[in-house]
Length: 312
Image 1 (tube, rainbow, N blue to C red):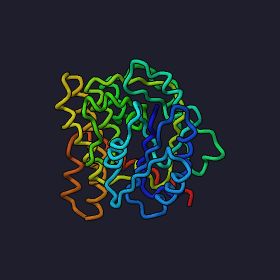
Image 2 (cartoon, helix red, strand yellow):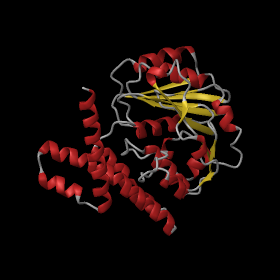
Image 3 (tube, rainbow, N blue to C red):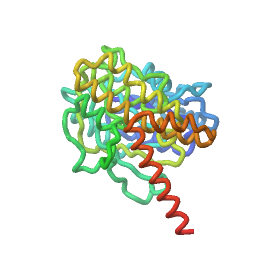
Image 4 (cartoon, helix red, strand yellow):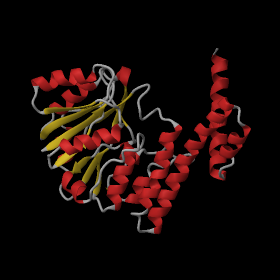
């Protein structure tokens, strides 16, 4: 059996779709939904569904603590031998859990390529693969490949392997005392999977089985502040204590540098708002890699502004 874990906050418009897609799956144990202090009627909508189906468990938090704390609460209530994460604005296509389970023998994590669709197109357009099929590595994933798959490189699209929503074996998580980092509100999946790989998780990548990631304006994964990015950048310090090889440490170093470029971009924006030349120089000249990244971002912003003026 498989428990589906949903952590949600102000998802009244989409939570019923998410839960219904989980309830339709074979091999389902329970759908454990943690409402993370919503201010809309998300918990009331979940409660109505739970009153009609005993497989739905609602955990209602009065204060928003972030996705990591909410998922840890759901894990504490989950008992099935396998579990998987579903975001409150996403949904499963029929047969996804059965499809993942068919690949599970001998593995602790089974992750499929995600499908993506824009919210306003969800009813009218077929979703597309997050990673083009030709670039998706069907393999047993190792730590270095995973970490570097989340690193931005010039001319190479970041694969965002941390966005995966794998089927996860509970026994491995419990034996290795793994949980989501409560301090992280961005990249919590990346840290969780990376820590599992360093602890020896057997992590298999398989073709898409039907997880649909809905791209929405204002989604948490698409909007983040400087502090969120700093926590994602600095999570590598905790992972380094588990890394045993120089190659693993180099991969973490690359990840740090990549995220730091995005941190400094936000620092530049804030420096401009504050009219602080000192803060601007500090961010811009942090390293040659940061300088190159910022120049490229500024050039792109200028290009887009010129294009918008040309269309006006």
